[in-house]
Length: 293
Image 1 (cartoon, rainbow, N blue to C red):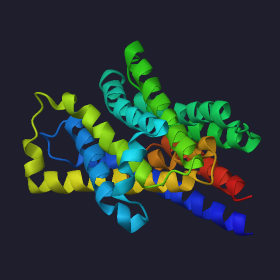
Image 2: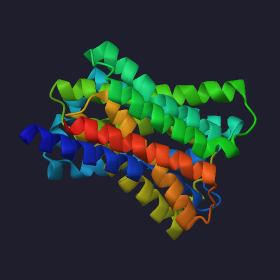
Image 3: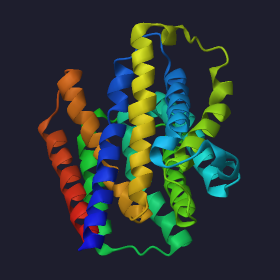
């Protein structure tokens, strides 16, 4: 019973993480027009890392441990994966379109995560995980089917790279959690390192937008909510869940993004896309029920 209750808490944490991650796209769409996706991405990672570093004592962590955390190999995997995701995914959306890039990146994320987790932790490929993930990925494909644009080989490769980066991040976090890593210290250091790695991408980019009130609010929301809080919840949930199922539950991200797009951005949705969302929701429910056992 206690184990089941703990699993429920982990499931809720990861689902909430996916939900908050799904708000990032809407926040970017509402950002000042002059803000580039690159500067928004760097601001999101940098502010997220800074907030977690400042709030470490509130979550049982300590700034005194940062030196030892930086030396952890898994943290560097997390940092490099986070840094790689930004240019890979945004580059893919530019070359291949948002819909196809999202389908490939998010759709392959559970696969990459599960395969890496199988190699590193001997995590089994459970039948329910395969079925739930397949349903969710098919749903994601149906959701975006009518928005798919011209196929670009490099764009597809970049989207696959973004999915692989996410898989590496999740497994890097799981590796360090298994070695006693603190669930807030790990992402705090990883995002801070990632922001430093991404700084060269800002050369020649205008940052005047961040000095405006809408810019400040957007940057704070992206960093504090869609990065710091969302990813901390993900790592907390990952303590008691396997990497593959965790990645599947994170598919709450596109479900949330679609709902917010309809609600706040006046986007329309077709019957086929609605059917796709239903598939995603069924997959999430199946995986959530399976992880309670």
